Image 1 (tube, rainbow, N blue to C red):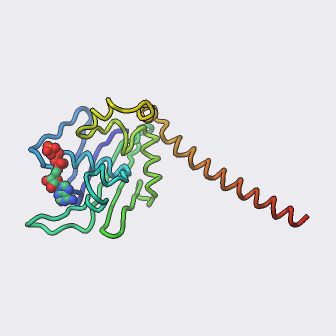
Image 2 (cartoon, helix red, strand yellow):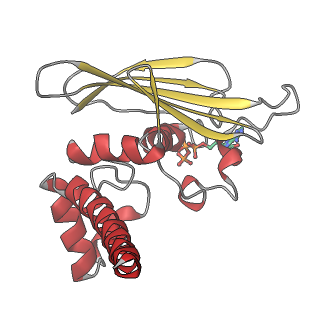
Image 3 (cartoon, protein in one colour):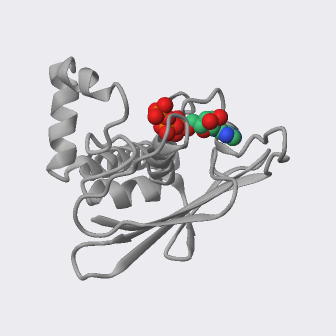
Length: 194
Ligand code: ATP
């Protein structure tokens, strides 16, 4: 998967709609301290489904919404759109995450409303995602070096593109347990009828 475009609106310091075209090859983002470079990486993680406000450097998820300055009022919502090359057949993938004050997050994939879980699967299948080791925030290099074997294994599994299988396995196990409970109940009822 190759990220081609990122659109931000009301997200952290990006109060005005901003659009970034990410060309093939190496892209560098430069600017003075506090201009929003880390906010860009956080926008990518956020649209991929990041659910921890702490890892977005906030106390609550609504903290990603532009909080206002002395000159500008706060915004009511934040939205990030990620456009990527899905890889296999060159089809484009558009993922949108929007958060409104008091209303939580909503996701869309290629124009269709989806759950956070579906977004996580889309990225997991493409061997990336909000927790992908490919997204290295400040201070994360030391964390990778100090990672425990189980954490390293998760990184390797993500790189190998099998992280999505774990999510599906968990789903399948839940369905299996529900079906087993139904069967046990059915047997009870049949026993009562005999
Ligand atoms: P450095 O080079 O120091 O790491 P940076 O370019 O990575 O800085 P960021 O950390 O991305 O900068 O941006 C920090 C800026 O974003 C701060 O000015 C902060 O006030 C602003 N900011 C963060 N969250 C919000 C928000 N919800 N509303 C408005 N501004 C915000």
